Image (tube, rainbow, N blue to C red; front, side):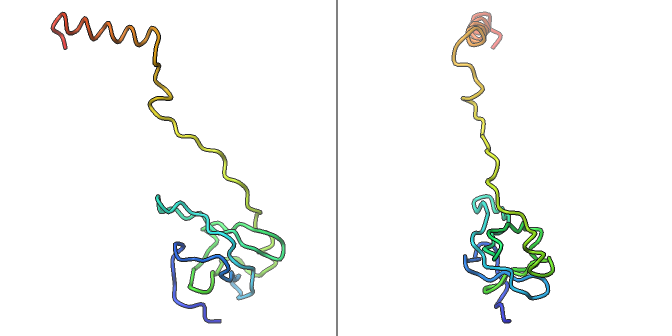
Length: 122
């Protein structure tokens, strides 16, 4: 089958056929998992006869306009791909989350700055 020209994950569309390394049809791309702003490609969720399956980027041999080729052999092997799971929660910690708005630490810092200015050690 003519899969077209090679392409990147950024142009990969849902509904694109996914093939095993032996040429057998595994399923169709359901979703591309990526973080475009950081240029990170995680993999694809494939709609298969066995339900949704996740193919990590390491299992993808090549991507084309009309097809994705996996490194695994046979549609049966593709059934052993893991089911997609939600990503673990992540949290970003900012300066406001770790600084203390009031208390002894702030008072001590404030007094140290005043003493440094009064004594000329700033």
